[in-house]
Image (spheres, rainbow, N blue to C red):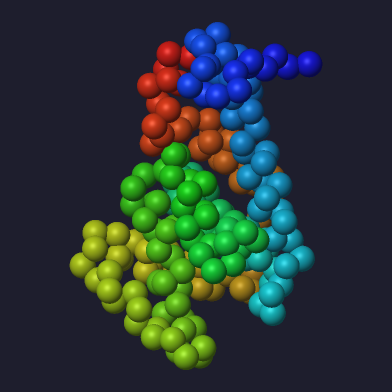
Length: 194
């Protein structure tokens, strides 16, 4: 059985309590890649009317990026860009961005967080929306990167016959990405605990 802290209010906690919590947290954090993979796999069989299920779409987007020589961080972003579909039906890019934020560069984070509006260029006009909604971001330093992500990887990744690597291909990349957070308020505490 794992040790547990003894306070009932955080303000009453002690350094010993936080030593226990820190030890548990480090072990829990090591399981993050497994939890992310399991959550991504929830998209399997979820077609939502699309030609391929959302899991295949995610794998196919990442496959295209990997085949195109993108770096591991970018490929992981491609893989996880729609992971928020299950819990964030109306804001899925925000969910993906929240998961990736501690681990990715600002340009990749912006790309993931805004890909929904950029992807809309290809279909918003069919559902009574403005397909040029992305133009509000014209001139932003990451506009072209995000437009390119959608054009090359997200938009064409609905082909049931296209090359689609299995998750095992991406798992080592995810493990490396999630092993070292670089954008977290807890960075100083993590150094002390290392």
